[in-house]
Amino acid sequence: MFNNSSIPISLSDDDSDDVAGKTKPRVRRKRKKPRGKNELAQRFLRELLRWWLVLLFLPFAALLVFEASRIGRRPILPVESERNSHRKTGPALENKSEGNLNRLDPLTRMFGGVRERCLKLLPPEELQQLDIPKGKETANPIKRVVYISENDTPYVQGNITISQQHTEATRFNLFTGNQTLEQREKSYKVRETAVVHCGFYSENGGFKISDEDKKFLQTCQVAVSTCAFGGGDDLYQPIGMSEASLRKVCYVAFWDEITVAAQEAEGRRIGENQFIGKWRIVVVKNLPFKDQRLNGKIPKMLSHRLFPQVRYSIWVDSKSQFRRDPLGVLEALLWRSNAVLAISEHGARSSVYDEAKAVVKKNKATPEEVEVQLRQYRHDGLPEDKRFNGKKALAEASVVAREHTPLTNLFTCLWFNEVVRFTSRDQLSFPYVLWRLKVLKNINMFPVCTRKDLVNSMGHIRKAKPLTS
Image (cartoon, rainbow, N blue to C red; front, side, top):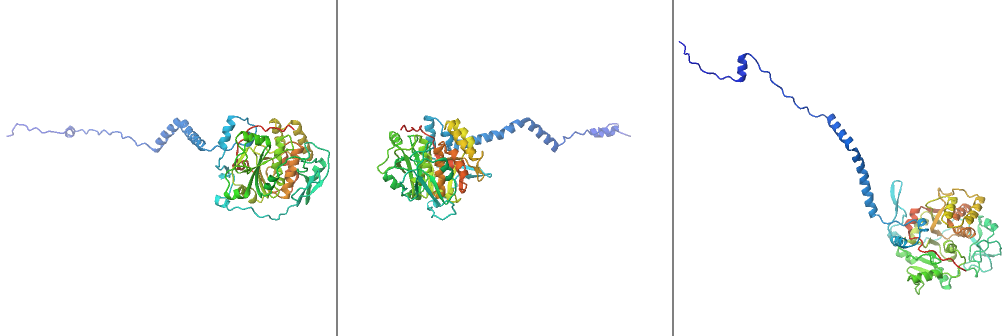
């Protein structure tokens, strides 16, 4: 009844298993777990530990490249005068001088975390409008100064003179008068009328200038002055002044005949109008001292006697080029702070006694004469570290600005007498006179960077020739 022919039926694998009564287990593949934050941090730490030396070096390398680029762009700054003063002359010095000459770039310093200019002058448009302020009465304990004279020749500008004769002297002569130690002590007593030696005592005392030059000096109300005796330095033309200052300020250079000859040999001749550039050249004859450094103290300290009508003066050492507007400088250093004297503080030391050691070491004076001065100062009680208004009282003194008042005139007379009696290193005597004359308080002791902004320093070009007779 049934057909024996078979019909094939295809079965899948799964069906075959089911048919066989078994189920095949499913194989699960392992999934890769995602990397967590901890693993990334660990890898970063491993890399950091591997390369930390390189990473540490990179900022220093970048800073080095930055500073190198700044140095390449930075202008050459004026060389500090203390370093220049004892440097040997030669081609290297001449090249350095030429590099400093006529630079007008302002100097800056960091103060309280802020970079500021060392000399804060008024803007150019305000400098053009500056004028000499009118004189005003001040509470000054010194009303007038009487200059002691060795003869009866009066001082032509009306200052009283006293005729006296003295025998005790060191380097005192007919120009200075022979100040005794007793007179020295009395000169520091503060009186309404001060009596003091202050040069220019005799027609036979020296420092002769022509009548024509005297008339010119009497016309000046503001003066910028310098001097070169013994042919030691060249004359550098002032720069940076306004037209207003050119009309109102006298620029005067005091030379002796040795300097005239030395400059003529360099091709710099005095014109028929007695000028070289902006400088009026005043030729001095019969200098009173063999020491040319001491002769240089006369125009530096006794400008009130050379310029009888001047109210304000600025002294600049011959090794420097004055590069700022003089009326602007007076406004910044004197008028703005109501000071009567402005002078730069010493850059390296603050003690007179430390300065004395440096003077001897650099052969600026003999140990014997320095010891005589220090012995007197110790006897008088000068402190080891004399300070003035919290600043150094030791001055560098290559730039001095002052108002010509009876008090400042007395101060510079006393200062001059100290360099005549002891050494011609005026840094040693300045703190002493400041300490003794306690009534002179409104002084601006400005920092070294301000002095460097005032002048371009060249250094002494050649050694000054001493007088032989």
